[in-house]
Length: 266
Ligand SMILES: C[S@@+](CC[C@H](N)C(=O)[O-])C[C@H]1O[C@@H](n2cnc3c(N)ncnc32)[C@H](O)[C@@H]1O
Image (cartoon, rainbow, N blue to C red; front, top):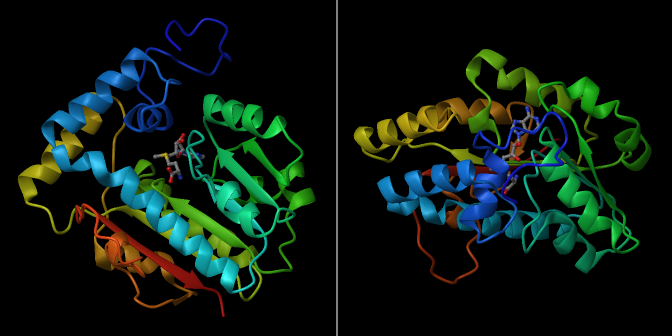
């Protein structure tokens, strides 16, 4: 994608966007020059950040396998980004092809790419464009209300999204909006930027680059992040760096930029 011609009206190809920046970082082709410049700026300044997506996605696989083992058979990914190699529905449908999976993103390009991918075969997955800061709007979306049964356990994924939502938006309220709708036995899968274990100058560099490229980030340490699990019981090993969450035994680069956990609603 290079000119932006023919895009939906709310897509600005001249501004970097997190979904497309990640697509570029993963070797994808669905990004614009602004996204590529932003991704390279961050990776050049903070080499380790190249591994964040890998840490997030490996954590997502292990968390989903855990939820599937627990009998969860419907999934809502909030802030899904662009399709990647191991999407939620790829992992879930390998175990249960009938399990509903709904992707949500505010970005029209990300949703369009998911819909294009999913339209190529009959599948129990779909994608909708919505703003996750409005839980009532998301949960009341006709496609979501039709596909997901909130009277049964559901897996809600919030991975690599909340750093894009500042504290002024009250993320506790946002998560509570979903938690209140979730049936007992439902799970919240969360991971995001912490920066708590990084030198202050590196965190400042990350934040500065985010502002420069027009993608401001909010990092949250352990104490703040723990609040997101109010009303959930944390599965072992609790809130940790994602590679330490039930590791598969294969040693990988470990940045310690992130925190992640899975909570179960009792
Ligand atoms: C880094 S991507 C994360 C993608 C995916 N969850 C993953 O693990 O790779 C963050 C996504 O969150 C989306 N996003 C940011 N704010 C949002 C909002 N208020 N509502 C819905 N999606 C949002 C962005 O458009 C972007 O696609």
